Image (cartoon, rainbow, N blue to C red):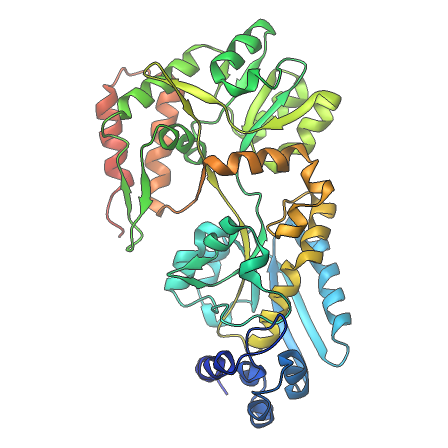
Length: 436
């Protein structure tokens, strides 16, 4: 049976399973998995009303279940260990699971080359979900088997995994955002509330504050914080009013920050070097930079939400993009049922706790995020504090280059002296350009 036909069989049986209901933590009957093995479809259908869909799937499975999984290069050792644990949990089934390395930031691009040949289970950054869904590359989470995905993960991660009211992926981490690291020998907690105060204290200490406005991901923090909008349209184009009322005030505020000579424009690699060398005492960055800051600043290592900054004489809270890592299932998999159960396993409470312990990645799982270890982690706690002022990253591809150019001009002091309204009009024209 071909993969396309299998997916159609799955779709029909999935509906039957959901309608039949199931007790405990499972929300669907085992018939949804009959497409996993065409030879067992009849026996699987007979077990629709059974209360244990995993037992039904095990009984319906013959031969070796062959799966391919993609995880990031940094996650290979951890994921391989969890795959071995998964196999051990179901000794009645013979699994042949191949693990491949794939950057979560480019998963979408490679999957959309040939969805049917893509892996069965894969990790990806949440901003890719709309295009994956539109292309039919994600199996809806219309059934759960070992835990309730929607209720056991933080609301933001569930929102990030949802399109059009339908859950399409399994939250894996809730730490793909940014906040402020700082050296507490230079700043008090009170100092960190205002960027103006931070600049005064850093100047007195003859050190710098790094904010990478040349990167469109971080430039967003200023405009969104001041109430200006950037939204994604259904056709993957953008709507943006950064050139509207108040836009030039934000642009001027950014210019003013960098003119102090204390706020400096540095990318992630440059920040890592500057932290180690001691030239900066604070920076806007993410959890991946926590180890660098902790090693350099020792007992003075600290982190908190982003501060306020001055726009047209008023204090404005800096915003941010929030980001999540998700796991998806390929609807063209020959083993959709086992793929869904594996996706649950790789994102369940135990896996999220183990991933934090092994790699320091912030859990999306509510119970895991509430653990003492996670709550006492400065970076994870700072990210949680910033969450109130963060929005999910939902932007079309035309945003990045024009926004990067705008950020570079402003961070470098607008060397050509271009009128700010003209700068913003040009940037917004590119950001909102039709999708080709």
